[in-house]
Every structure is written in C-alpha cells, then in structure tokens.
Image (cartoon, rainbow, N blue to C red):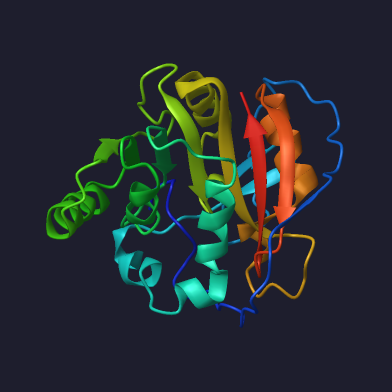
Length: 248
C-alpha cells in the first residue's frame, strides 16, 4: 500500500465509446495558501485519515494489483490510445525526457518509450516489486530508453531541471504527501515543463468509481496552482477521466 499506484481491484470500469479529445476551459481555482496543511479526520473508509485542501486522500493498493493494471480491457475502457495521442500533440520532441510517476507495472511507460526514440522515460515508483517488473519487461521487450527510478512517499527522486513531461495517471489523489510530491515534481521539470494529470471525473456521477478516487477540475486546479504550477488546459473526451495540463 503505497502512493503512485492505481485504484483498488474491486473498481468497475464503464463501457467506453470512441471519442476525440477536445480542449475546454477550466474552473478558476480559489486562492489558497501554498503551505496549507492536512487535517486528520476520518471521512470515508476507503481513504486515509488525512485531508489536504479539503480533499480526503484515498487509500492505495500495492503490487498485488499488478494484474488489474495490465487487464486486457483497459485500452477499451479508458481509451488509453486517445490519451497517448493527446500527449503526442503537446507536442513531444523525439529527444524529450518523460517521467511516468506511479508507473506501476509500466503500462504507460512502455507505450511512451516509442514516442521519444532519442529520449528517455523514467518509470518512477516506490514499490520494489513494481520496479522489478519494469526491469523484467524492459529486457523482454528490448526497450532500452526506459529507466526505473525508486521514489519515496515525499519525492520522485528525479534530478532538478531534467524532465520535459510528467505523466500521472490515476495516482496523484493517492499521494500521502501531495505538497511535498508536487514540490519535487516542480523541481524536476525543466522551465516550461508540463504535468499531464489524469484523474477520474468527480463531476460525473455516471463514472462507476468510488467518489474518493475521483477529482474535479476545480479541486485539481486548487491544489496544483497552490503548489506554484500554471494551469494550461483541461482536455475532455476520455470516457471517464479528465486530462489536465499544468506548466512549471
């Protein structure tokens, strides 16, 4: 049970329809102090006893959930192909350095690697079992522009000013120390570097995910802007998730 990993195995996925990502305006976030701290108060049994800027932090799963991360229906359910297409359109340079934070088994890591043939993908996780699986798959697939990085609950452990794009898929809402992690991510990004934050839509009750595992655009903006990031866009069109872009 550690941050950076995805939702519990009991979560149900919706049927997904082909769609196109479109850019929409976001919701203006209220002004909040960057050092606003957590408050211990139990709200949801599926969360931890910690609240950050009004949001209870969700529980996470460990390496036992590896099969769920690699489930055959994932692309159909989440339209991960559309997400990758949207990232390519940022655009991504062939020599860019990407960081997949909360990489898990490397589901996105190994799909990002061909997009940066002269660059690198840093697969960040804190679970040794997940990192071992990434190393195994790296050798099996002969994908050598991937590097596994052991992070911690408070830091991605990436060099300063080294990363062009950080990808976080359904992981941020489970960070036990969100302020510290956002500070570490911000430090790791090059000037103008981008965070692609993917979270299940809290605004949509039809998304069959527990409420604590969802985030609204307003809440995401509140937290990331408080950490010193500039909101760039929110792209809707994935069946169940927001894609929010923030810039250093």
